[in-house]
Amino acid sequence: MWVPILERAELRGLLWLEGPTPLLPLAEFIAAISLTAALIGQSRLLEPALTATSETMPSESSALSGERTGLQFPSIIGQSEKMQKVFEAIQRVSRTKANVLLRGESGTGKELVARAIHQFSPRASKPFVVVNCAALPESLIESELFGHEKGSFTGAVVSRQGRFEQADGGTVFLDEIGDISRIVQIKLLRFLQERKFERVGGKKTFSVDVRIIAATNRNLEGAVVEGQFREDLFYRLNVVPIYLPPLRERKEDIPSLVGHFLARFNAENGKRVKISAPAMDLIMGYPWPGNVRELENCVERMVVMAVRDVISPEEVPLPYGHLTSLAPPSPTQGPQEDTPPLTQTLEEMERRRIEEALKRCGNVQAKAARLLGITQRQIGYKIKKFGIQIDL
Ligand SMILES: Nc1ncnc2c1ncn2[C@@H]1O[C@H](COP(=O)(O)OP(=O)(O)OP(=O)(O)O)[C@@H](O)[C@H]1O
Ligand SMILES: [Mg+2]
Image (tube, rainbow, N blue to C red):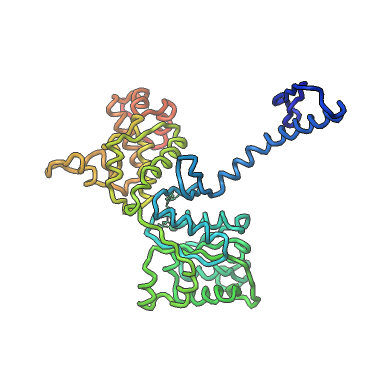
């Protein structure tokens, strides 16, 4: 006997039954089998949703899988022991409401970790609000955090909610916390102690439920000793400290980070760029003072600029001096053409590459496009975008 398996009324398969005559009356037997087929159809519908959930949850990968072991978070790469410790801390702390202080050099992933803590906390469906304390002038930071009432200062034409109010039920990420003034430190301390505040120029007391994650790349202990940062505030923020190690101390993470960024930028740029073994050696040997952010920018540049599918060491955009570990230039030689300074923007580099390709191909756009591995339409667009003059 055949029973159809349906998914939203569409035929997706057939359930085939064979064997001796069933003990149940035929009508009941057919009903039971139809129900089984309906459940199969329904579970097929649910399957993608379940897979998506398990992909977004951090997991302890099974030792049986034989692949990546240990804790994993979907957007954070790190197999090294040091990063595994960070993952453990994220997992443990995300279930609680404790304040977290993220420490680590610039580009080590502090904001990424703050987002992960929020994402895997019971507050995930509520807002995650970022306040960059260094980017705000002192006069504005108080009203940014706590809000203000209409007319409280020149320009305050309407009342406005602050970030703490906006984040009610969720998480506030106070980035560059080491940069806030003594006055704001006092207000923040009161908020952390009582979870209460008034808007600037207002009398009404507000009370909100937010989790605070702060971050800094400064030596806060030093600032406390020098009297620039309040000790009591430091202890309030530092309930759970999480330290993000610099990339040079976890070089074993570099290959998977490179793979992760290559996949992303290849997809974004419609390319299939790979890194040659000597280029990878060069990447592994560099100290990455700008940490993961610098590595990410480097991989993006390589993908965008790649002329062929396999990156050679000369194409790794490291600062002048690092490429020379492979082929030292003579002292009289100036900086290598292929080693643009780090301050050069991606657009400038791209423009230069296009001009160079056009020059090499005698201004024949089709040839230059082939050389760059892009289509004729793409090169035409870029020539227009950058306003490149072509002498015919
Ligand atoms: N472990 C990681 N896996 C994948 N991407 C990462 C990782 N760490 C950092 N990144 C990426 O590197 C970039 C810098 O990370 P992030 O902004 O979190 O650093 P940060 O510590 O906050 O730096 P800063 O102190 O300069 O603000 C981001 O684009 C982030 O996605
Ligand atoms: Mg940051």
